[in-house]
Length: 157
Length: 157
Length: 157
Image 1 (cartoon, each protein chain N blue to C red):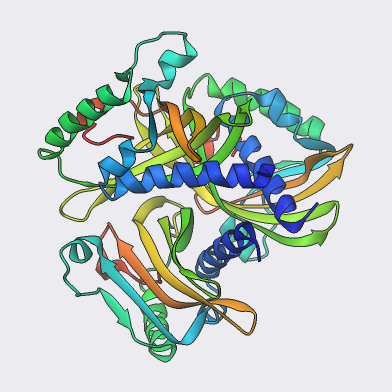
Image 2: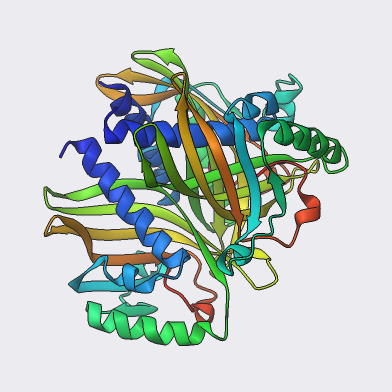
């Protein structure tokens, strides 16, 4: 693939990731990860200070599946719509077949009264691999600027 | 056109659409629709439940032109600036010369005191056709997550 | 370069610009400007009315460097994280080797308590040139919709 095509394919993977969450298609969302994928949500402050403590840490797709099930249970008590905006997709490392990428995100949540608010902003720092012709996340790291509402985290970021 | 060029051309159409609204060039905005274009704003909740009720429904470009004129009149009582952010442009169907696309948007409004706020988030679900070498909206469907402020809708989304 | 490659290269310049601010790498940020670069922040209202008054006006890279130093000093009294979202990158003029571009932005700020808020929305209207194979800003014009918080401007937009 050309450099332009790779960039666009990675952008599409991120956009599909967001769409799956926003439309609550969590099985499709899980299908975007490799079996050995690591998913974590980590406060930016911790990352800057070299502290490893993550708000959420899932060491494999199976662990992530369990976590999603429990998040969706919590979601019954915090019903809302998510809406992602993503920009600034950049390839930061890697080689053909395995890429590191970075992107900024904002997530807005809307409650049952139709009121929307800014929920979280931050950055994705991911590793993507190609398996059987498909791009998949081997590592998804959500570095959150906003960490004051972890108890509200009822859907993945 | 290559797949990459089509994707970029659709993204540019959406970006131009947003720019026309944000700069209040509504004639240029109208020029982005086919004569038989359908424009509607529909709450996401209604769409999810199969309810057809739209907040705004315009069955042709002429109807849309009338609607815009009346919106701009309302706008005199709610003067503000709009600012669109769009991401996640995805081609969801169609074929060469007629495409279905989806994208996420956030609209921010700024009042005369220079204060900005989140006004609306949601999704575009559009049909675009090529006429005389130009890409035009045949169907523009704005699926709003935020529906608590319809009375404030003084400019198109 | 193909038209698609030029567009993507300009988008990457904007994304890198944002990343440098968001990660507080201001030397890298300065390196994105030509020596004779003009940087200004101007309220949209002034621009619409033909008033030249800018909130910030730097007539060269040296002036901009001084300004950044003083902004960073102010930043000690307003510690926060920035997060940019950029969309709608459009080439609005120019020719091969010197381009005019436009893009929408939203900047979110997060304080030390981990609370995020919308800080500023507006538009970039820039001139970019190619020097020694690198794309650089010769003119960076930040047209702010939001101008009610200039006293809080502790980092560049």
